[in-house]
Length: 378
Image 1 (cartoon, rainbow, N blue to C red):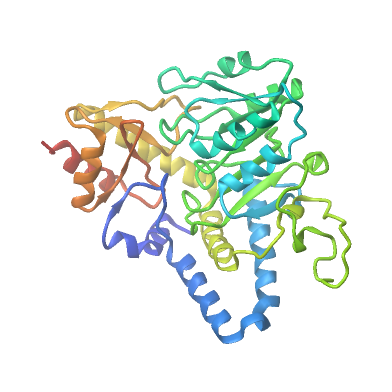
Image 2: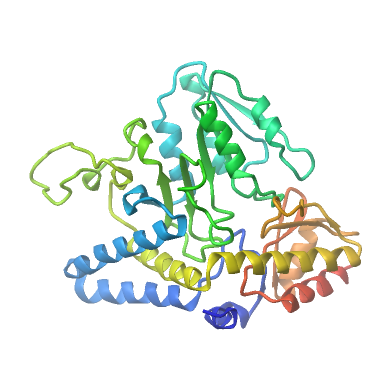
């Protein structure tokens, strides 16, 4: 699929907005909208009689998710209602002992802090490592660890600064020191390749409503097979066991893979729509998306600086992402966001700075329009 064809999939939002806020809640492509409509009509016309088709569709989307992550098997993927749930699978299921600790970046999104802070009653300490400006240094994370560190967790891309972590470096250190490495991948899936067979990641989670262009409430998690039996299962239910359809027989034999965390009813509509968006992204090609987004954000940073803006985000090649954090030369970030919204441009503010997050279907003209409007504000 060419980028121009992808842009045609986004005509609904493009008719109304210059949309540059994919790090928040992204608009749906037409293929995802069609998938939602198809599910609604199918359920209205058939009820449970349509479920053989929809369970097959769940497995089809699981295969797409496994392809996105290059997972060893589709069994290593489970569907989750949100990133928080995926993080909590590990936080609540980990074999903690009083005195253990978790190390994370202090600027993590709350979803990757509160589930760990909630472990205080079990004697687990959370160590929050501050950033240095826009960057979070690996050595600072490592120095916060000690012999009681059980988990190191980061977002693949930090939501406010756009800093992209070196997951291979962090994960390799964790393997060497017997530390579980968890990644909140919501701000990079759909933008950068994520190969869990190459990267030493023990688990990751991401809802689909940002760069994956899916609806809210349908996400994916990956659990490395070696950890399935070591994590206490939470949220278990009828579909967690090896014979989920034998409702009259109680046989609490859990599935020997990530499927044990899919305890209850699936969000069929959301998963199907997410699958349509995954298919679109995979057809475009994640490496092509990466290249395009870096081109767009480089253009944004260059033109913003020419207009007197300050680029807060690290733009080092290994640290740049689809999120650009900017400081307006005169106005507070919230005022800029509100004024742009009134003029048909969707951006956001985080940590007191303007956050711009274009996707690969956006164009340099979209970014120039934003800068023209925002730079002229009084």
